[in-house]
Image 1 (cartoon, rainbow, N blue to C red):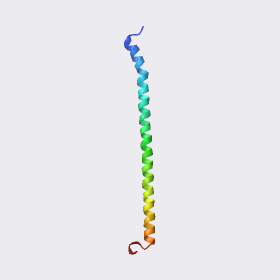
Image 2: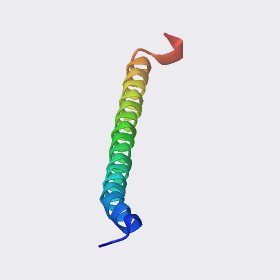
Image 3: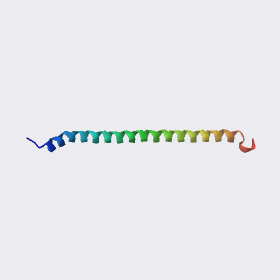
Image 4: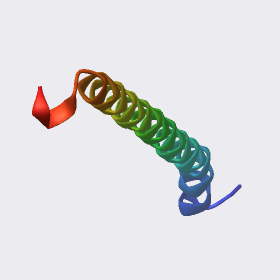
Length: 67
């Protein structure tokens, strides 16, 4: 028969593995979320640049500062 501390260790070990898997999944999930936020921010910045460029083109077509 095994000593109680070995039995206890065997019972705890799979739980620790499960916790590690859960932690690594949580870290992966956070990285995915951060990547999505970064992509969204880049798209917003790009859209703002296009809007500014188009506004300047319209402004210069209207005569710019002399209008």
